Image 1 (tube, each protein chain N blue to C red):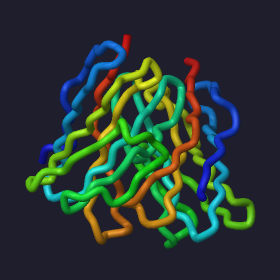
Image 2: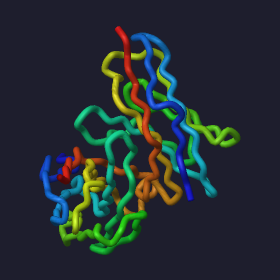
Image 3: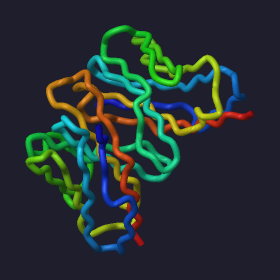
Image 4: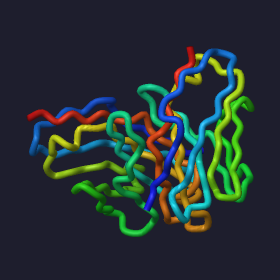
Length: 114
Length: 114
């Protein structure tokens, strides 16, 4: 069975600072990995996905993530935080394709200080 | 191009009652998945429908059932509601057979059981 661990429930950064949100996964087969963002009272929006192509994945809004098999990690980064980045971020894994069952982590709340 | 739509937006029910939630997939999509997101948690997979049949199921009791119609829209039914069923219910649509294509999420239905 697959699983995702997101360490820490809350990250706070200053505007313009580096954003780093951590995600570690467990999977017995090569995984598909995703980062989703959720703004208050809204559904989930896909930021980026890893589907066994390039290990460095670029997404929307300046976010990127690197798949590291040896570390079973898929950390999300953004060089410079913006106030509009404040939201809940979820890492998810699938083992049968991007259109199959997603297993999510518990999420990380990102706060951005002016 | 309409995205995934869900109705109703909010719903309040009493313990023991039954509820039906509805989802219309993104145009061109043929697969619908349902997720339950409890407060402060990541979404949990309930089940997925394709060609009007349940294709995958998560760890949810039989009180949770679904249906997919010929136009690909879907319903989630929950019987004998419990207080613990209070959550945001998310619908996601995707295209079968295209493993690299992600799921698109709707805004969700907020269910409160009193």
